[in-house]
Image (cartoon, rainbow, N blue to C red):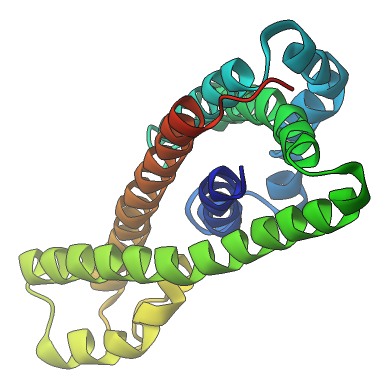
Length: 236
């Protein structure tokens, strides 16, 4: 159960670290709108948590801990569909709903499975360990996925800058902006026409990295479902 937690919460931590950057810098959302974009996810967790808690009584722990991460994996993959434009309801809303459904199915049964895996006298320790694993998963995922996104961003920017025939001094000046990812700005020395094109390239390059990241997150969710299918056998 802790390994499942590590993978699933790692995927979730990576997504919600980079998603605000995508919403604000690429899609032009305000900070308030970017925060509100996550409300469907929160509502799904809140409204379905009690129902999901009953799934373990009806089906045992394995079924919800396989189905939930699989649904979450679909939700993660849906975040790879939006480009640099489009209305919220047709881009991020479906992904939020499906991800929220998957996590709602997973969270309560996962907590119950962890608690039932130890004697009652050790329940507090088990809960604390599982909570620590979920926190560590988010931190580890952010560190590793940052490398993935930065690598993809740099590769795509190199390709686009070369295709634009940007002056070498402008390309060199942009190197200091790369670590900012979607928040990068065109170098001051760029011609106005080049500056606009570079800003467009920055958005597209970040979307490339973001898509790779959410597909990795979907893979982590799938792996957690496979772990549940293979390792969780005890009744609740």
